[in-house]
Image 1: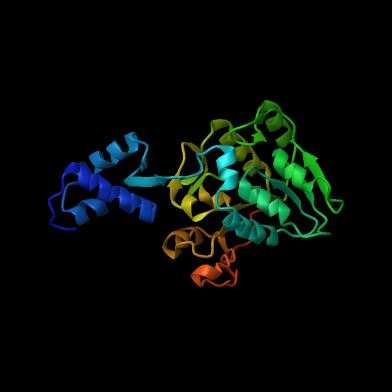
Image 2: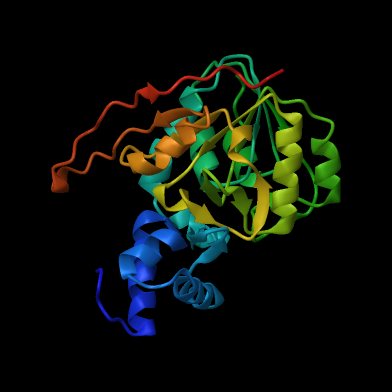
Length: 282
C-alpha cells in the first residue's frame, strides 16, 4: 500500500474496507500506511462519516453498529449465533438472584435459556421477554409498564423509568447496540440510552452479550464507559485482538459455544471463561 498514488475515492474505498475488517482505524496509522498526511486521512474519514459509512471518534473512526435495523429485522438475524450467546449468558446467572433483563433479541435468547428451578426474581420492560417467562412457576416475574417503543421493543417512557428507579437488581443483563473498549457503550435511541444508564446505576453488576459486529462499533447515544460492565459474553470466534482490550479493562470475558456447522466442518468448542474479575457490587 505504501508509495501508491491513489485517487481520493480509491483511498476512501480502501479505508472503508479496513474499518469493516478491523472495526476501528487510527488516522496516524492510515497516514503512515498510505504515505500521506493525517489531514488527508481526516478528510477521507469525514467524507465517509457524512455518508453514514463510519463514525468519527477522536484520532480515527469506528464501524457503524448493524443494530440500527428495525425490531423485526433484528429478531430475524443471526438467530443461531444469538442463541449461543444467550445460553452462555444464562449460565453466569446464580440461583436466587434478582435479575433485570434489558430489551434485545440476544437477551430474549438468554431468557429462554434460563435453567429450571433456578429460583430467580426477574424484572423486564420488554414484553417479549415477559411472555417467554410468564408461565414459569420457578421464578418471580416483575413487568415494567409504560408505552412500548416499537423501534426498541420495550417500554422506555417516563412511567417505565420511574418504576426502574425503584428497583435494586443484583444483576443486569444489558442489551447494547455498540461497544468499544475506548469509546464505551452506545445505543441508537436517546430514550433507550437513558433507560440503560438508569439500569446501570441501580444494578449491582452488569453483563453484556454481543455479536462480533457490535464489537469496536459505534452508535449515536452514549450509555457509559466499558468499566461499568463486569461480564462480557462474546462469540466463539470473536477477534482476540479486539476482546483483549476489554480484558485489559478488567472485564470477565466469556466465549459462547461455536455453532455446529457440519457442512463447513466446524465443531463445537469449549465455552471456557477467560480472565478474572471480582463482583462490582459495592
